[in-house]
Length: 294
Image 1 (cartoon, rainbow, N blue to C red):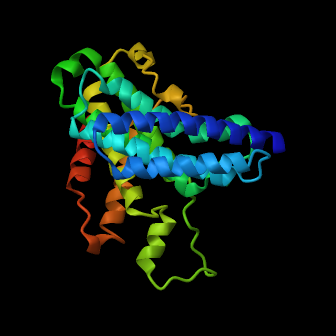
Image 2 (cartoon, one colour):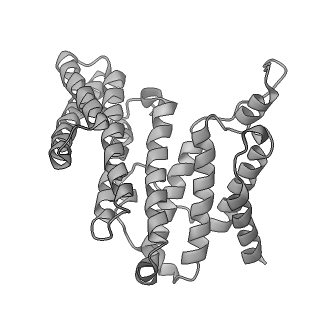
Image 3 (tube, rainbow, N blue to C red):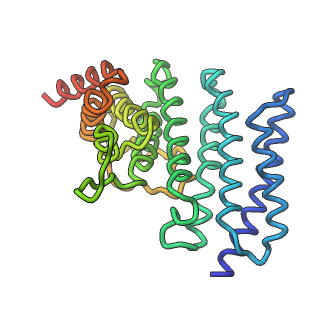
């Protein structure tokens, strides 16, 4: 165990140095100070100091958390730039792949070193959820821009399908890290609506967004990719390989999308009715699924 922890400390230090160099390049290219890059750089400087003190290795968890927080801030800066530039066609694919790789590194590091039977014991549910959410949301935004490019879709809808499958799986992974709360007589709640949300596995607004995003991506998959030849799905984008998550089972866009959007509508019109979450788009997509089924 000590050897594995020491290995993680060394690897985190190496990755931190690489990330710090990357942040320096981003800062120079931006030509101005950015809050997220400054915060990421400060976290990596603290990481460097702690790694020097922890060579024998007792607190890999705090080191990994610092590195992960820095990566989340650094990639957030880059994601915002991609969105502001509307995902330039000539460079976005490689940049998205690079960001997915950065956001996958913490999980890969823990898994490769087998420190804990469950790597959530080291990273924590919230960080794992955040890493999966950020990868899924990035692919959602990228796919959203691609669905507007008619000529690109005619030539490369097979790539869109791969991006959609990866993005949906990241979002479903995010939704499944924490188990729904089991309601019983031994647990009391002053707010019944809150209890219903927790029992449905809805722990935050981000969980609701993940449901809507994954449902919408299923819609894009069925709308733009349903007529592909079967072997087109085997094209390699390089994105999923950057993750420790393997997607081996075929994904049924209609089945997955219908299931998750029905739950989304039920929650929004039930426990969250007073918060006026919009369900119009979700209902339109469900209607589309129903017509495709018929």
